[in-house]
Image 1 (tube, rainbow, N blue to C red):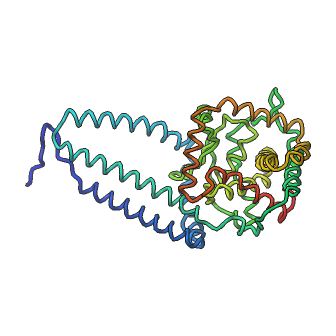
Image 2: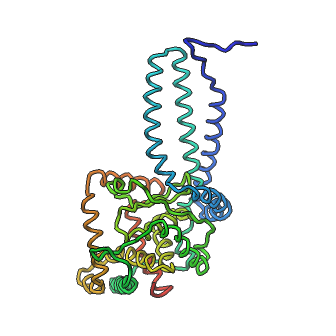
Image 3: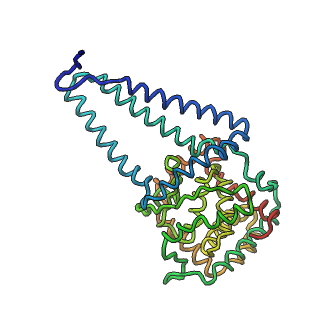
Length: 379
């Protein structure tokens, strides 16, 4: 029998299993990278992948994650970072203290970290990355996206302002007259209702994936990054910043759920999320979707024609104005360098996924909303 080599109480690291795991991770990742490259050249590949592969896989994983009453993503970020720091310090200390097999041990640790990173990349591509190559949602909905006149933009802005004002009447308010949501848990539990409805109307929005949004406990601190929601592809989990004003929370949740249901590009994701809100049976969801869509239209109109903007803004009711003021005042307190850095990182991430306009892509939903009104009528 061959004896294991031991020095200073340490056994020589075994690298065979590590190499095998690395090889598997590398093989899977490269296969998905190639598939994504092919999909960007032929959107039909991404469409077929989303329907035949992603949907069943995401449905299964999401149903398991939904059973957890806490955010797995938040646990990973907080616990994972602390664990990584502790392991790094411990590893460095052991390398210094115990010189035996030092380079082999360092090599093994490096290979393990690289393997974990590759598996994370594979999960990202499987549950999100390939969707950036999907056909535009406008094609599936039969929308005609084209240059629109300022008059059309003014009309749409006024339409959404009136609709939001009508739905806003009678909704719960706090002592300052601002929209108030009494239970985020109940709100998130019913997030699928709007999607179920639109799935019957628009086949392109139909999906059996039903992620239940999760409340992030550290939401207040999250606001310093100006992040209002996050879809975590590794778990098919939707995370929501519930410290932000309540009027924006349902629309934020709808946006992140849209990611979890297979939409990646931000303009398509915005539109899909808003449409689910427009058809939700709960007026709180409808209002949030309407006023969030209105903000995009309003910002575009303000930049193009101040007079037309003033005409459209006149349809904003006092109750809606209170919500908008509360939101402005809330975010004013979080204008920090951290928010700027977060925006730069998000911009780079979007561009890396071939959204050439970066964070400006969010605002491109205006063109889709104008096409939606023309084709489907008032929201």
